[in-house]
Amino acid sequence: MSRFTDALVVTPLADGSTWVMVRAFGYDVGSEGSGNHIEVPIGFQTDFATIPRPFWVILPKWGRYGNASVIHDWLYWAQPRARLEADAIFFEAMGVLGVSAPVKYVLYGAVRLFGGLAWVRNRADRAAGFDRVLGDVHLKASTPSQRPGMLRRLANHAWRRFGSRRSA
Image (cartoon, rainbow, N blue to C red):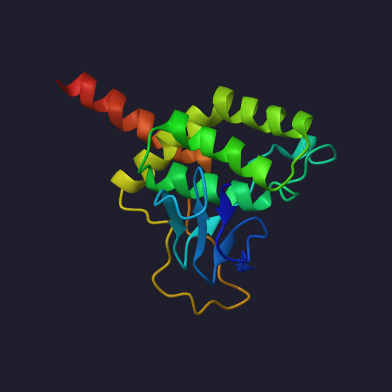
């Protein structure tokens, strides 16, 4: 059976929605010791489950699915596997955590429907030189996240693409 190999240890940033790994965190896909291992490095920034605020009453950003959300965030950031496989690992990891079937299917359905935006944004952020893995994990309570807002980032990316087509 799949398993998480470490305890999840994080600390919050000053923005109140971003957390940083202070200890490496791993997950064995498929079965323990399968050799199919995911390792989330120290310094990685996560927001846990990216659930819009109006839905937090039903599904908070952190729940029984929290550890699976961190693995999924890492897979979406680093993109070492295809998006479909990353989503399948998220679904599997929620099962390992004992997430109820309704919650598991709702979260999986949401990442399948809307995750493409995050996938593209992460690729654009990496191309622009942004790194969600902090090199210095000696944080202060006032350390903010360095990641720009999603709408601004997507608008800048679209503007650059549109601008390059117009000048051609």
